[in-house]
Length: 288
Image (tube, rainbow, N blue to C red; front, side, top):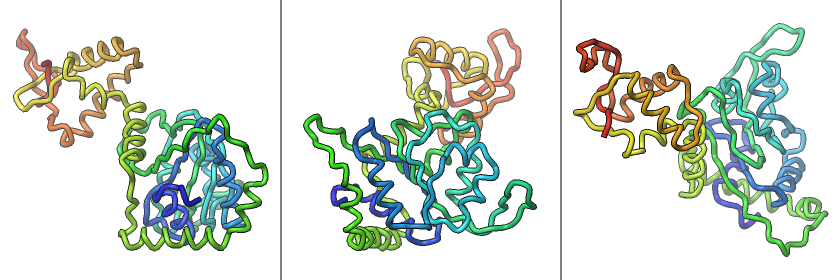
């Protein structure tokens, strides 16, 4: 545990108290065989009945799943599914819950309950969304990568049992992380690698981000302008050249409209074509 990165230490400490002020979930990914399941087994003994095994995918798809986490401190998804989430509102609401929430159990009237279960997921890949490409979904993820398993490493089948003997020390280690998180106003300190991991996941989920950085295809400048149709056609050409699947035209335009301030662009309802026709387009972006 001593080699674990500071964000992991703070996050486990963060899970010791019933609070979602950190506004984050954690994903630890690796290729397999690095010992992720051992971490889950040790945490189960540390948290006892205050931890539950669960599924991020189930929270996303099943409206009854949140009620199972009422008054639970930590939910661990030991083997997160690789399918992209169809909807993210349940997951995001669980990560950011600050008060009573509407919960529902099968066959029973919905009611108000406390939800402060933090999410820790182990996976061989990234947590993606099928439709949600907002910054909020990815900003809420702390993404860590395990070290690769050495070829000459000898596995210790009783490692979890051995570490259980160190539970008081592990608790003190996590509590010190909680104190650091509190002193940092509930902000997690991320390494450059962790920030890069999250940015890579965002770009993989939304290739529009990478397209807007392709200076050979597009230019962001105040004096530029382009029609919505021409811009989308340029984007589709870039996707084809790079073997990417293009987003639907509506999704492409909606992303640009929602991020106008970020990229210094502006929706233009009176873009004039060379033929003199007025069409929808964008200012601040155009061909290089």
